[in-house]
Image (cartoon, rainbow, N blue to C red; front, side):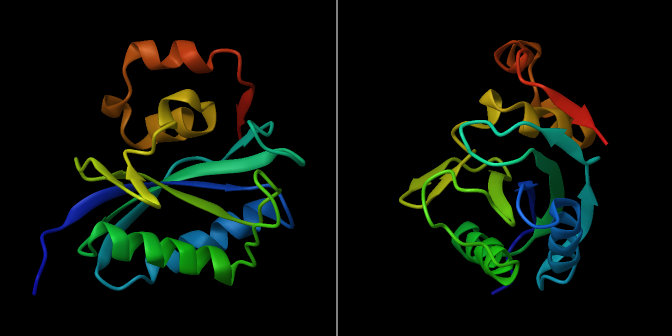
Length: 155
């Protein structure tokens, strides 16, 4: 069965190991995904941990078009995280790689581990700033107020 193409946005972050290298490796893995095309990436940003622990994060947002269904795409992201050595020893632990599915087309999904749009994307400067590089039309002017106090630096 051939599915329609869906545009997805993925929040990417790392604050353990070599964060910039981890994001580059994740981008290479996304580029190689079957049933996917048109990978684009925002600039990289440095931000302090937000509701997490450890050193500063390096963050970005990736965009691509895929024919995977949402649960299959989430599984692909989790496989990339595992390949990067992602472990989850405790909630908000430092991460070698964190890939969050921010948007899956225009879908609204709430089924256990899969919730899109990501429920906290508007609360996070490390999502809004890189997302603005790729799809500024997705951000409302009022969204910037909730992240005004979060320190973030384009790299």
